[in-house]
Image (cartoon, rainbow, N blue to C red; front, side, top):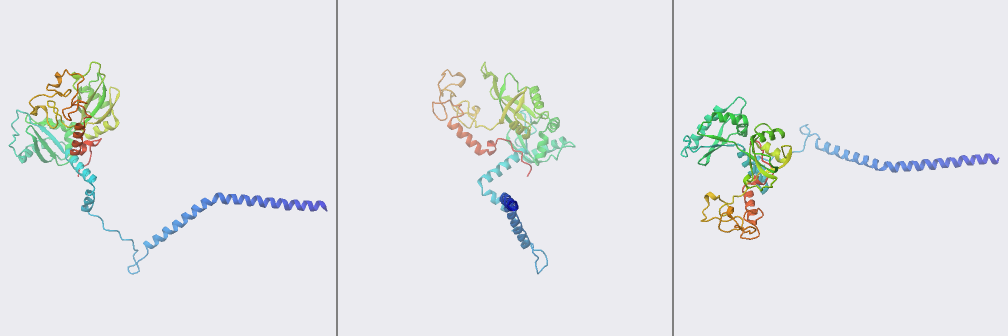
Length: 371
């Protein structure tokens, strides 16, 4: 009898224990799944709201039987878009900059030799364009685009600036094929001057002769460029002015197109297996080498005597013997020389030039397409 009671009591205890374990496991499982269930419920509610809005927006119009859709506002006109853009000074500057860059991309230049007589300054723009158009028509090849002139001008007596109708035409004339074809047609009265996109190459190991044509061809091959992409190069400072122990020098390299120039600026330039740093060659304000003031060159200087760029006295800079003395002719301070780029007047002149030519402050050349 006692054994039967004990056995029954053991069954009750075991059942209670199993129920407690199951309840605890269930609570734990629900607690772990609750966040996921809540997210599913939120998603379901959001989906229901979306369906409700769709049903409302596409409900059938009783009068026409057609689904009604929300009415869109009037599309802005081209004038509205441009007017809105011009309200932002930065957008206006960008539009002006893009327009100037596009015009420059369409321009090509011809030099007139001193002995030439076919293009006098008295020749009208219409007659000049007519004569040049005959030359371009003879230059045209099967693969070339249409070579039509838009306008011509004479920025100087010794050159003619031609704006082509499209950028494709100007780009083809700049290419090695186009330039070669044009040179074969031109006589002694005109010389084609290719437009260059200059880059400034820094710290070229000496004695690398970057200005030599065979070195430029080697650079084209090393940098994956087409033959003729690098037209020429010049040292930033004349080799005769180098120190005897100088190991590096800077140079300006003239690229045939903006894509080549931008590629070198972004990726650097390989020359004789050296990776060189490259930046865009910016326009710099003109400083007279005679009076050391700004805005003109020595050949046009009206100053009665030379001013030394080092000490500021009345003698040529090359003849200066005042070693260690410094005086700036621009700001009249004796803390630096006239050639110092950190001179406050020089910095202001560079800012004024950047304001006049906004593209000067950009790190890359513009490659905007035709308008």
